[in-house]
Amino acid sequence: MAKKNPNNYCEFVADLNLTNVHRVYHDTQYGFPIENDNELFGRLLLEINQAGLSWTTILNKQKNFRKAYSTYNIQRVANYNKKDVEELLNNPGIIRNKLKVNAAIYNANKILLIQKEYGSFKFWLQKNNNISLKDWIKLFKQTFKFTGPEITREFLTST
Image 1 (tube, one colour):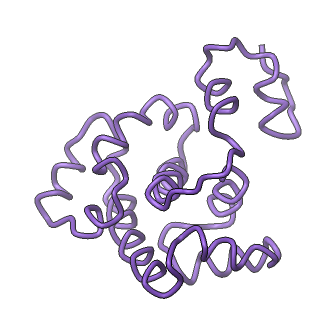
Image 2 (cartoon, helix red, strand yellow):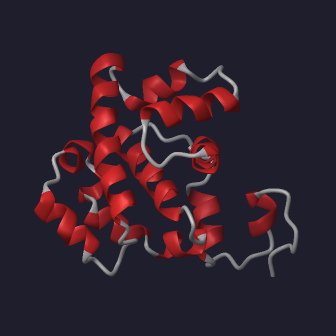
Image 3 (tube, helix red, strand yellow):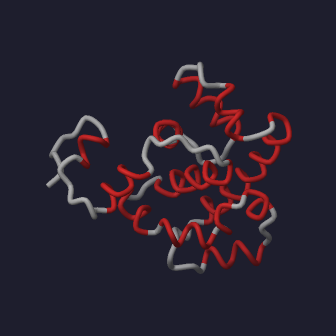
C-alpha cells in the first residue's frame, strides 16, 4: 500500500508491488536522463496528456501513445495532417482531446525549430539548465502549447 500523504513520487511508490505501473515507471524511467530527442518529446507528450487526469491512466496507455504517435518521431508528428488528427481523435487507446492532439503537433514543430537552432532538444534543455523553475515555466509557456507549471515541473523532474 502506498504511503497516504507522500512528499514525493519516490515515497508514493516505495511500498507498491514491483509490478504496479507506478513502481515500474519509477524504477525504470522516472528521473533517468533521456538523451534521445524523440523520447524527450514522448515524455512531454505524456505529461501534457496527463493534465486533468490521473497519471495511472497515462501509464496504462503508454504503449498506445507510442504507437499512435509514430513512436514519438518528432518529424513524423510535426507533419501530421487532418486525417492523422482524426485517427488520433478516434483512437480509444489514447486520450482523445483535440487540444492535446493539436498541442502535440505544434510542439513537435517547435522542437524541430529548436533542433535547427541548437542541434537538439536535449542540448536546448541543457543550455537552459541553470535557470530557476519559475523561468523554466515561463520559457515552456512561451515555447510550447499546453505546458503549465505542473506539466513543466514534472517533465523536468522526470527527465
